[in-house]
Image 1 (cartoon, rainbow, N blue to C red):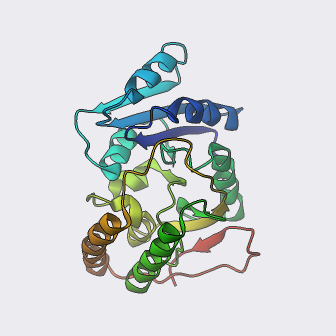
Image 2: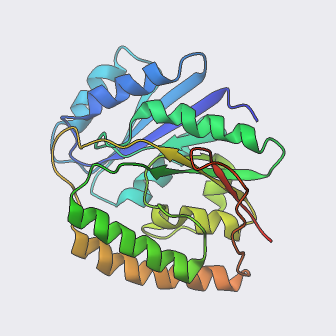
Length: 253
């Protein structure tokens, strides 16, 4: 399966220190493809939008969408995906912790299942560059989510994703759906691949989330996601035999 054109959607909130370098990395990491980079400024109160507009003045492949207020990461992603010109979408976080040079890793993962009905390639962060408390909280949250939804994905919170635009827009939308994308994709009958990707420290600024905030919101959203999945039947994960360094294929039994 070949991806020759791609829309890169980057939701961001108060990322003026990281966004210019991140945009440059995106274009440098995807030579030989038709690419657009869509920055969704989710109600930033700093100069994020101004930085993007400066670059867009000389780079026609760069687009800016602005929310008048902070609507949340899932809403920002939806705005970007809705505006995208191409059938395949890559997403990454605006803080720079997801290296854009890992997008080709996601694209390459499609080669292991060229005939499969793949809707999503989900990144799985190796060697996370976060605080110990954040890593522990994430491990607990992923374990709980997996036990309830049985989506077979160890790191659904990784911002590096590659998916079909039609598949994402067809999912039921709710706040924080970006954390449940693999489960929702499989709910709708799409195959899901998991590919290991690298991770790095935040380039600048500070996180917009706290561990407590993630936990409280995540618990409520998990119940909602479980209800949606049960209404349509509950698929179970199937793993292909592959080395740890290669992607895994998740599908229906």
